[in-house]
Length: 96
Image (tube, rainbow, N blue to C red; front, side):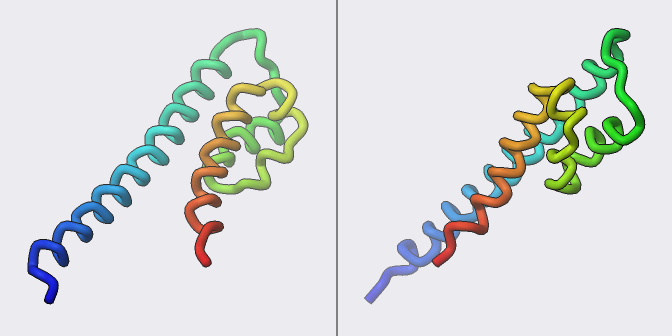
C-alpha cells in the first residue's frame, strides 16, 4: 500500500516544474520586448510599419516570424522569438 508521502511529493515536483517552465517563458518574452525597444531606439534601425507590426506581434503570433524585414534587420530578436515559440510548441508536441 502506498504511503501518503509517496502520493503527495510527486505532485509538488510537477507543480514546481510547471511553475519554472512558465517563469522561463515569461522571462524570454520580457527580455525580447526589452531588447526590441533598445534596438529600435537606435537611429540606424529604420523599418516600415509592417516590419514593426511583426516585431511587436512576435509574442502573440508565430506567423510574424515569417516577415522578411524582421528576419533580415533584427536577426537576434528573430532568434529569441523562435526560441520562445519552440519552447511553447515542444511543451505540447511530445505527448503520446
